[in-house]
Length: 312
Image 1: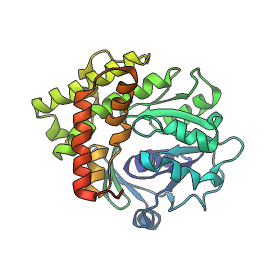
Image 2: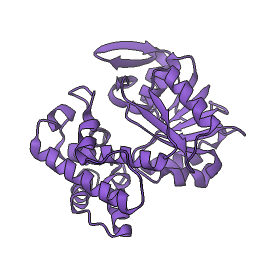
Image 3: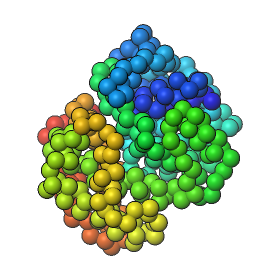
Image 4: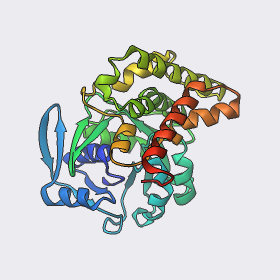
């Protein structure tokens, strides 16, 4: 399968790297020229379980040299979704499918407005990735599942075909006939640890040593679960602590959440699409979300102190 990873940061490189190893033609698109040059000159270095291996990959700073693909895997930061996809329509052919595996909620609607809703699939992945240097990524792939599905529910042949390609690459992938519930399940994971880690600057190992932070994370998840229930979403979790435990399961001690990685790289976070989406949906359905409101306010304050009113 010919695949373009649109937004080949740490997670995109983790997924794109193992898909390349499985024999697919994968293009890694990242607007950072240093990252692209490093991958094209010496290959993508994947560090897994403390061991490095190098994968020969195709990388570019835009979609221009890629051509039409079978699958566009969207992994850009949430606030870049519309801009990135609008600049990458050259990837689209009659049968091209666009799959978002981004954090949070709302990307599918933005993508549908650009490429047509009939092309768009949704999904969530628990695979982890952390940038060590340009073209060098620490990955957590094994035992971390991925879920994909049609926006309108049901199980289609095209979703099954993509899942088969992912599974053949060692990415444990399941087709969901309730992708909205699946997306909320992943949102709970991000709600549990993302903002807390970014605010405290703690990696996963350090975060999980603090019972007070666990209590805060679990409380944020409980609010999100209440919002989901009030919105008619069917979840696969019934205990908020499940989300807290799953968020860090199987990841190395030194792993950092994507929100913390964003701050450390000099970028704003995706807080608006994670805890922020819980707050906004809570307002719509009349469910109070004071813990999530507080986390959003604190992280927005940190972003303002670091970046002012400018997106980095």
